[in-house]
Image (cartoon, rainbow, N blue to C red):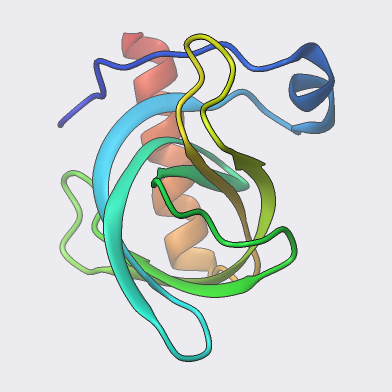
Length: 124
């Protein structure tokens, strides 16, 4: 299981909005919008979404289709999502990228993500 070395603080208001805290996780994510395909790294994840590190984040409200492998998983997770946060990396210690909220996770993928997040929180 790979964990990101990079950690960063988010403003309190973003943490208040989030349903659960994210845990550090480094996985490659392939994502596409209407006419573009990208491959970047997700730096953290929670039950509701993930943060993709990129120097070219999409605009707030952009719909994406994500595909990624969870550590220890056999099948790729494919899910729709929407960009709910954009960071340009302007603040000290802030990483450029975008927070993506999951949309239509099937129950199997949701359980795999929830289990992974619980395990990472427990193992710190």
